[in-house]
Image (cartoon, rainbow, N blue to C red; front, side):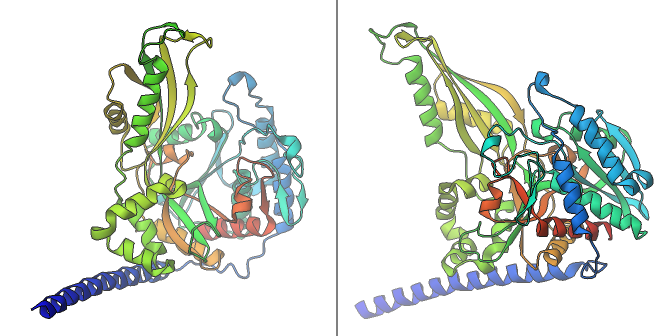
Length: 491
C-alpha cells in the first residue's frame, strides 16, 4: 500500500514536471518561429552592401553640428536661440537637396518639418530627431571639450552625439544620398527636426502634432529616439539586443503635505509633521502598485526566451505557476522594475526653517513614471490608499498619461525589425518600453503606431555618455545609422 502510494506520487510528479517542460519547449519554439516569420515577412528592398556612403563627410558634418550650442534650458531667461538660428542656416547649406526638393515648414521658429512626397499619400510616416541638447555643467571633466566636435579614437565627441544630433545628421545624410539617386519613397514621408525635446517638447513636437491634426493628415507610423542596440545589457544573453520601443511611460509629480501642530522641539508631540510624512513615505514603499505582467512585458521577454537559461525559460513559460515569483523577481531588479512597473521615487523634502522649530507642515515631492498598464487617476488613488492618513494631503503638480502601446505585429514594426537585423548583423529584436519622455508622446496622438528606436550599437560604457560625460558616437555607428535610414527611405 505504501509502495503503491509512493509510486502514484512519483508518477504525478513525473507528469507534472513533464508538463512544465513541455510547455517550456512549446514557449521557446513559438518564440523562435515568431522570429523566423518576422525575419521573412517583409524583405528589405535595395541592397546596402554596395551602398557608397561618404563616412568622412558625414563625420565632418556631425562634428560641425556638435559645435552649435543648441542648449535647452527650463528657465526662459537662460535660453539663447541664436545658436538654433545659426544651426538652421548651416543645415540648409550642408544639405541643399533636402531643402530644395522637399517642402519645408518651420514650426515655432526653430523646428523644421519636411514633406517628402512619395508614390502614394496613403500610409504616410514620420521620422523625427531633435537637435537641442542638455547642458554640460561638468565640461572640465570631459576628455574633449563638449562642444568641440572632436574626431578622435574612432569617435565623434560632443554633447548631442548620441542625443540626438547623431540621428539628425544620419537622417539628413541618408536623404541627400537617396535624392541624389532619384529615389522616391513608396509612401509620403515627413521628417521633423525639433528644437525643445529636452525641456518638454511643448512647441516643437507638439506643434508638429498640431500640424497633422489641423490638416487631417493620417500617419500610419512614426519613428523617433527611444532605445538602442545593446551589448552586455541583458544578463544571460550574449547576443546584441535591439529594443524597438512601443510606448513610453507617463509622468507624475505629486506633493505630499503632512499637517501637525507647530511648536518648540523641546516639547515634541507624539507625531510631528515630519513623523507623519515619514510614515506616509514608508507606507507607499511597503504598498507598491500592482506588478502584474502585461502583454508588452510578455512580448518583450518571449523574444528573449531562446537566449535564456532553461530555468528562466521554465519560469516564463509557466506563469500560471510561477507568476508571483516572476513578478517579484522583476520588481526586485531596478532595471526590469522600471521596464515592467510604475516606479515611485521621493526626490524633494522640506520641513522646518530652524533646528529647534516643529513645522506645522512637512512636504515631500515624489516623481512617478507610470507604466502603460495604469493611469494617472489609478496611481493617485493608490497613493491615497497606501498612505491612509487624513493628516496627509496628496496634490498633483504635473501629470502626463503613458502613451498608447504600438502594435508589434504591424508591417511598420516588421520593417524596422528587418532593417535592424540587416544593418546590425542579426541582433535579437524585441518590443520594449521607453522609461523617459520623448517627442513621441505627441506623435502617438496622430500616428497609428509610434516607435522609439535609435539605430546605434552601444555598450554600457558608451551609454554612460548619454546626458553624462564624454558623450560620443563611433564612426561605425554613424555609418550604420545612415544605412538604416537610407534603407527605410528606399522602401
